[in-house]
Length: 583
Image (cartoon, rainbow, N blue to C red):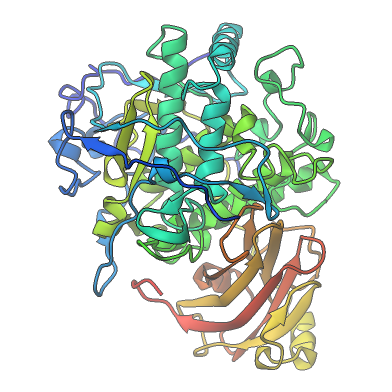
């Protein structure tokens, strides 16, 4: 197999300028169209012996003046993107702080205790982590393109991780428990009794999982004596990678997990839309449309992609388009419906027990990297958050030496600075804009009979519903469709899709102008058993793709639930004018 390596020296000091990017468009290949917690003491103490100043804000475009992506020839390639910075106006609160491990309690699933403790071993010493120098860039490969030699090495590393003592924080189950503890209520927010520390459904999602995989990868490398070892990514955004990678389905492999949906095994193609369409080619087309929407078409600003702010004492208010889209779909698609809670991958508490979880999240991390640095700036203008409550949010992990370390969001904003990159793979979704919708007659008839949204909301969404929503003005204005106060039962899979002026009412086909976006969640635990969030979907490109919408004062919205039964209430829906400020 061929990897795309940096064609220049790989120490950070040398990586700054010798490489250059071709002047022609991108290195992309051409697109192809809970319970009460039992607490422990004493408190943990932080050692600053190896610390750096955690109060300094770091600009990820040029961390410590050492890496400038505009001068880098990268494996992924593409345009650099805009350098606009976004911050939230108003008074700042406090960043989310690392959990107090000595106060770790009981994780729960469906209001029942998890059958084992998800709490890590406690220690009296925490070191503020400093990223080591990068002497050789690790290249994460596409899981469908790896060599037999790589598969042997990966199997060996996972096997050795599984053979570590159970109380070793680097062992397979201890590593899996990290996701359980951070996601199913074992931790309260530091200093906030009975307020869960949750790393999903907010701007913490991407940074937490990037750090999680970073240390997981380093542990595996140390176990086999290979510091260059890199995790593979499941390339489910490319048609050639839309099946579970073969190395994960061998029953004799350390990578195998029996708790997977039999219907998800190869040659089944992942259904990112949960449409249950049986036409494989249509499923692939749906998947590419979903990727284009969540990466480019549906996001008005940085928070629509990254997720809503989460500060100390607060609760998650909504994940970004990637988290609630392809990320959630893969989790649930693989999870075993024969298990009581969709284990393993289909529930947050158990997801880390399937090796495929880390391969899946490697691609999720790749999506963040692509969105940060390689999508055209005219399509995704704002990509950076300078809010100190984001940059200074912190987590705890055990490193490859079983040392407990504290890390911050600001130190993980650049994957190159962390020492890894990705194999170059085509992005067929990059220009997968749906064909223009030309028919209008049916929509005209429907709009005369569809009720006004104001007569339906609040709405318990347990069946397909269609209604009219007033635009802010005639013409193709820059507008956002806002679904407010979406309250969900966190113990259930919830997913629904949003269509606008859908002419054919065929909800199993998404590769059309009418498809706007989605909301979805993986079952998990919440203190209040419900969570409430708001999502915004950009209408600008959709208006361009719909016929004769200029003179319309309303649009016809269709909500299509993909889940079974109740579990979600939507408080309201409206159209607002787009702006650069977070709503």
